[in-house]
Image (cartoon, rainbow, N blue to C red; front, top):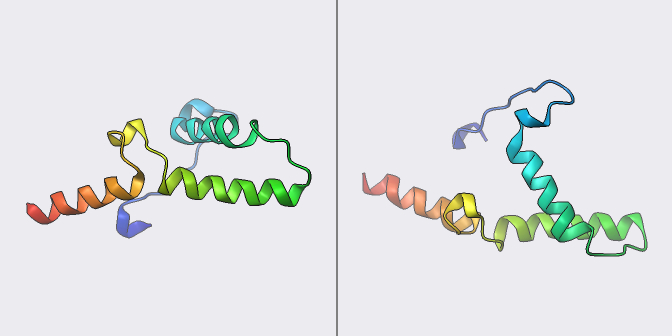
Length: 84
């Protein structure tokens, strides 16, 4: 993760305003992937959430990424960096 420039940051407990990106992700995860289903078991829910992570990162467009999927956005950034 350090290669990508990702830095670990600790926030104070019970302060969601300090971590808006994750709060937004969890809201989307619940609204689009969890609350729309009626799981019969914990295992079923766990599998569905794993699939949701894959879908969120590999297929779902993101407004914060100029309406691209994360892979497309990352590829675009690498091409831009190589052109400079």
